[in-house]
Length: 96
Image (cartoon, rainbow, N blue to C red; front, side, top):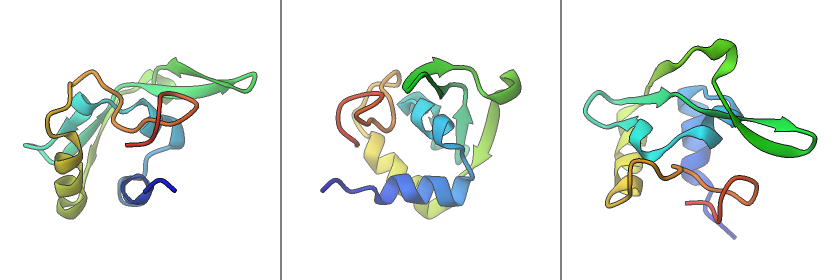
């Protein structure tokens, strides 16, 4: 069983849509400012997820509570900025 705790915390405390969460990349976590930059999203088309732009084509910046930010900072340590932050069977391999 995979640990979905960080996924649940980000969804609960940051108010992201599922597709926005799926579209987050490591570089979208701004640890210095304590924010998530929503620049990408995934949408379902005919049962498959496809990369897209955020709803209404508007990128947004989401504040992240310190305790969630600390967990995210730990999760992204030594990872490339262009990697998916969270990965799953439908948009990557395994869930980080």
